[in-house]
Amino acid sequence: MSSPERKPLIAGNWKMNGLGASAPEFVRVVGAYMGPLRNSVDLMVFPPATLLTSFATSTRGAGVLVGAQDCHAEPFGPYTGDISAEMIADAGGKAVIVGHSERRACHGETDAQARAKAEAALHAGLIAVICIGETEAERKAGQALEIVRSQLEGSLPDAATPKTVVVAYEPVWAIGTGLTPTIDEVAEIHGFIRGELARRFGDEKAAAFRILYGGSVKPGNAAELLHVADVDGALVGGASLKADDFLAIANAAAG
Ligand SMILES: O=C(CO)COP(=O)(O)O
Image (cartoon, rainbow, N blue to C red; front, side):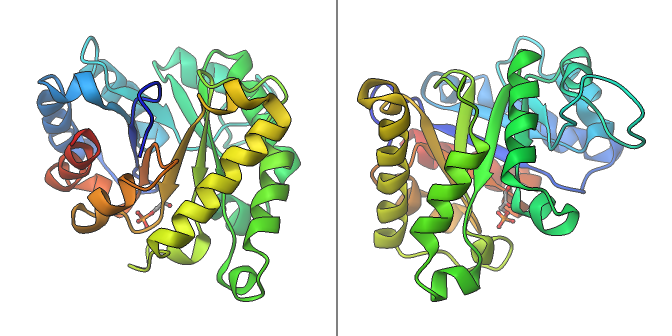
């Protein structure tokens, strides 16, 4: 459960999904958000980079923040296929996801790279949503806390502040599988992350960081997950593609 000073944040990661024809689904989210929901929940959507500009345009003045799913650590240069944090900001983006487990697994990204990307994001004036989380094998080996501790330490820039950085705990084995940790497991990890933030940044600053849970969040389990201590919102994959499901999750965070 988010504390009064931490407004819940529901973020939708569309991953490699979405064509121009998906825009009406997003516009429906924006329209619904402009009611009372806006006062109690922050909303972010991370479409594929191809839709960044059109989504940013359609949310103008509505308060939904649009972001990209990755960025390069350099502002420009000979990096075919990559986009920089500056380019994301230039396209109307306000945030970027870094260190997602799919980038770590498919592209071999390290904590140091996630940190460099987060630093680039901050430099460009973007919010960095930094993802961490253990694999199934690591959890079975009793290493979940240690993995989360070292990823957090390695991926978070020293310049991180609660306004510029959001931490997303996404256990890899829960992503896209329909599996979720128990409420006790979520509470343990989120409390542990808060403690690690306090060790590094001090109690007061640590208390203001938002820590999202991600991995198979759906309308049916959102309320339960979002009311766990130190869970300040959700990073939603599959369910963020359907406006009704995404809005139901946002409403669960509000209520
Ligand atoms: O990876 C995720 C969000 O970044 C979670 O994906 P799912 O919600 O589809 O499990």
